[in-house]
Image: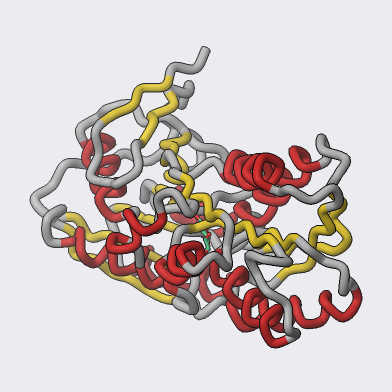
Length: 324
Ligand code: GZL
């Protein structure tokens, strides 16, 4: 039986502590004056990543962290090596956004073996191998399946054509948001027979690759009239490709996306993008809150779920000032 308790939080979004049943097999965290904290970032190639890293730095002093932050420049192998280095430096606690679900499992296992509690932030690992409450304390992040589903539902409600020809730009191959945003969207859109996904290809959550992939798919599918991007960076890249090809995003192509970046909110205001489902990067305050609860001996649910808003023409202008 799951209970959801909506708690006040520093995050703009509400956080629901899904009171899952977590056994406490994870390493303890003693309460201290100051904590040596590891944050092993995967890359800094887009506004979302940069905002997340800044959120941890901005939280450090208020949370009494001596923060060791690394950047794996898009390499899962280097992200594992960065965690090895942090373990050798004797960190008290690890915050890890695993770039891909399987390659980061060794980092989770090594931290546990070294007696270091790990919190996964913004992405998770393969749940068949590593489990919350056993190998890591908890996953702090959104419901990516629900994000994909909500993007599909907006499209179903707002697409006024009778045939939706969809190109899907997938996130990083093997990452939990890419896997789940695909599942959530594809399963929901399949329920409306006006739509067909004619192509689905990774743009690695990157703007320029998203643009290049869109250019290629546009050649193969000139009748495309919907783009579903797993993040705003690829959606903006797709908008660039469509405009270069003489198409009018927001007029003859509907763009649906996820994240809520400043550029996406501006594209919505400009009428080029239809919707972006929020996926907040501001994990610093939540990480501090959950770490302190864990150090105080409170039971932490295996999934500390971040609740997401939806940004459209109706509210984009109200939120662009807080965007990143
Ligand atoms: C979501 C996060 C994703 C963002 C992308 O929690 O993992 O990674 O949606 C980012 O913009 O690259």
